[in-house]
Length: 196
Image (cartoon, rainbow, N blue to C red; front, side):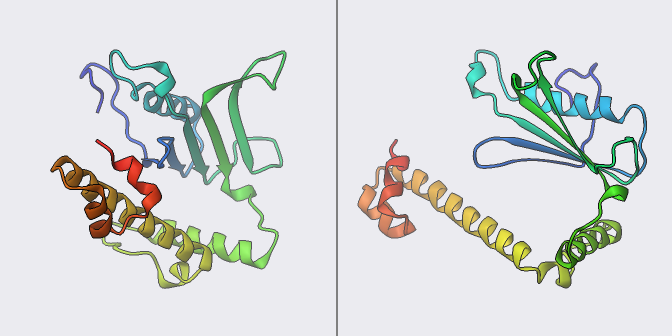
């Protein structure tokens, strides 16, 4: 929702951030429309400018990556992958960092190997079959090693974040660092991040 009720309301398919604070805005579009690029620019820009509050330093801004998957063809280019950045017209290696846009034209995507094709089919099947009753991903998608590895890494990261949260709470209660490390199982090199 916009902070100002008179401003435009917009919805994105997925917006998330990583541990470094970088933001990722994902849009999936069945058919290409002339306004889609403007909508993508609007939503990514909004994600970028909403990071700072009054008095915050500009150095706190983190990049926003906009990934746009289109099940339609909009470009004459034979490539399915299109990346846009803010660059100087004369010197294209001069870039203003902060916003990056990627558009993928699904009909042009042609996997090079069976494993690529299998992953594409599994993801596309999931994206087309998902509905309000879907509670988990299909078993054949979850059985892929790269997916299992990513989920395991997410679980481990979540467990670590929870341990750090508990450790911070215990530290605020005045408990000694040695006791906190023993309770949470955090490694000694992680202790300095717990200082009040």
